[in-house]
Amino acid sequence: MITLLLNLLWLLLGGVVMALGWWLAGLICALTIVGLPWARACFVIGNFALWPFGQEAINRRELNGRHDLGTGPLGLVGNVLWFVVAGWWLAIGHLSSALACFVSIIGIPFGIQHIKLALIALAPVGMTIQPITNKR
Image (cartoon, rainbow, N blue to C red; front, side):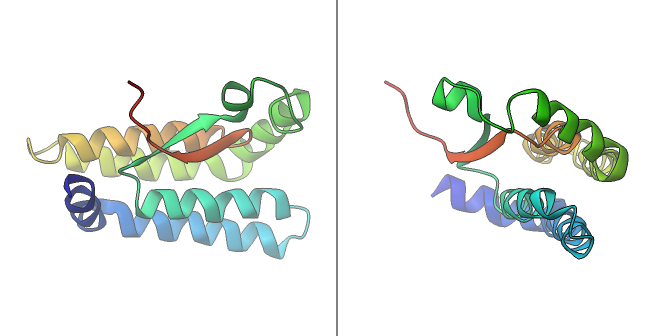
């Protein structure tokens, strides 16, 4: 119930705008054909940016315990290309939204979430979105 409430408040505090930013970046990547691998990631992270509470971004190497295409050297190259082309402006958008959220005490959890998304925006290749599970 709390997760639903936080997600609804999130939509008002920058979630919709930043999700649209991710989807726009995905659309631009898809139009270039070369950017198709990044386009899929943009749409997945855009959905995460729209509804982040109750989910988390995890490195696939930590999740699976092995390397794959996105977590190895090609993933590093992909992240560098992503940062140069689109990552920095999505990160700036999330940081700007975080600063706006930090103005009030109620907005602090939302600002923290924007900072987490800004870090994902810098290097999304090799990440996956998973539901948060209680590990007891």
